[in-house]
Length: 166
Image (cartoon, rainbow, N blue to C red; front, side):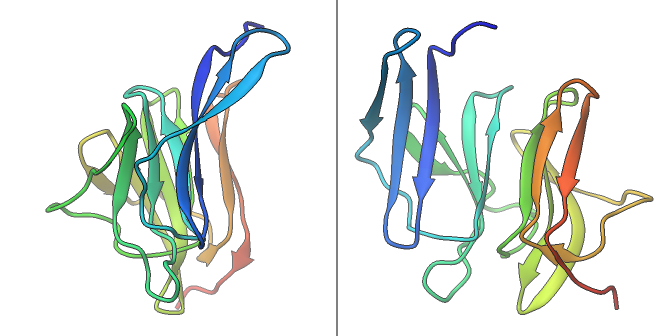
């Protein structure tokens, strides 16, 4: 296993939004660097690292009471809105999002919007969102977690709060 030389860690909270870079200089040396550019603070958002494009992505969540809008990418020490002016999943919080290494897309599932659980699936290919209609889909809900299982070559979803389909 080879050591990671540099990775971006993005910390977003309801109080502050700060981006940190985690730099591993050797087996026992770790340091954190703080970036000065900020994204609006939020919580119950989702994030994933898009390895194909080298960008940390953050979507949705809550800012105090209103829902936070859109997909933002962090690359080259800067935030930028990635999905402005196009079809997008809509405001939500508590979704799950992860990078699919095999297919090289970011997948987002479910969440909560207007006090309703959502059961949709969206994919981000680096330039646009596409809504998918899988035959088998998880039930509506929020607060799930998702990760890519490299050994099996698939995403695994750990479902959170269960909703009911209407």
